[in-house]
Image (cartoon, rainbow, N blue to C red):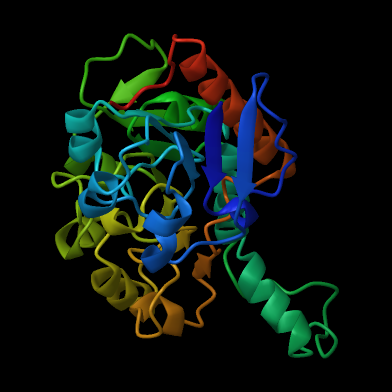
Length: 314
């Protein structure tokens, strides 16, 4: 019988069905790092969303055969240690292909149409005191006819491009491989930054992508351009971004930060600007996306127990 331990069940707001095989299931709402080894003693399958499983913990868990990651990102798992032990690690893929792109466009529309500034004006009584029927104190820009630059053209990048086309945007892409899409203009990053009105990041965080958007890249962006990041916070130099946003040269909509939960001294947390919107890593988390994730999580576990593991990282 498989012993399955879910280390941070409270991180997933969805119904998780019981696996279709004999098992002992144990659930913890959250787990501190110091409690990981004790809670996984005797477990053959560990489920974790964000609880770290490092090499020292893996070495002390002789019964562990599989780690089912309840997310796409696996930065919290020591994959090399798992590979050396023959532990299968499987993650969740392409579950938020509706939720994340919709969040991207929510941020784009709010910033291009200056919704934050206009809401502040209403709250301050400026509309009520106006001699005209409307306020037009901030520029309002359409998405239609603008250029959407997508950095990273995997499944999410392609879904964002599809929504961009529906809005009448011209699509430009920076990608590692040559693209066959007839209606996409492929550009190197520096050219994309200079020419696009909206730029959306869809890359994993790695040594080569960390701070790929720094002071020089931000300075190269078109005046009034919008930078969207629903991928990983570390892709952007946050101090450099805060400085540029304070000048009003560009706008930005972020759903991720370099450390989460963020430290109080993160420079982006101090901003109270109409050209910046920060959401707390919720782009992935529509109810529909979370249920897809929960179903795929059990699919991964059942496939492993059946001897045909899927979505493997090791």
